[in-house]
Length: 213
Image (cartoon, rainbow, N blue to C red; front, side, top):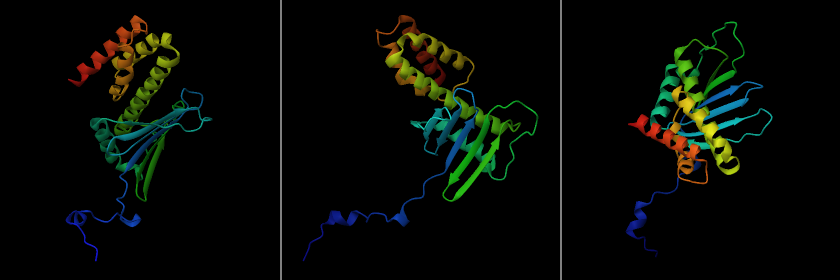
């Protein structure tokens, strides 16, 4: 007769497929503007802040990058989506004669629930705020990619890229710019890079620290 130790009593059986917890909601922002750089932008985020960002030409295959958004930004995204009824039955298009600003889509997924809203231009302030938030996330990811590339292959291009980051910070065009911290530190601490690049990277790091305080 087999003897079952006390410890075995504390381990529940593994969950069956039917018992697996349901994935949380996801919100996705997509923007398509042919001829722009990039032509395709897409950010997906869940309530934990786990996110992916894909920026590319329309002809290129998907290359999503995983990262973690701050709790504040994550909360804002889901708060604004809630105000927009998670994009269910809402018309965000302003229906005005304006230039092609890019086809933007908000999408909400949770289990079998799927809602979306598309627009070129909207006057809805919550939708504007949500789109600007996602655009700020995209801009940060593009800067991270450019810094990574320049560190490895084009160090002479770093001063220009760092200057663009400083300009975007002044314009408050970036969301969660702390995501650039690893690359900025690598530049500031490595003497093989131009001194002007090191100084700009250090100045940006100090600016980010001040903004957090």
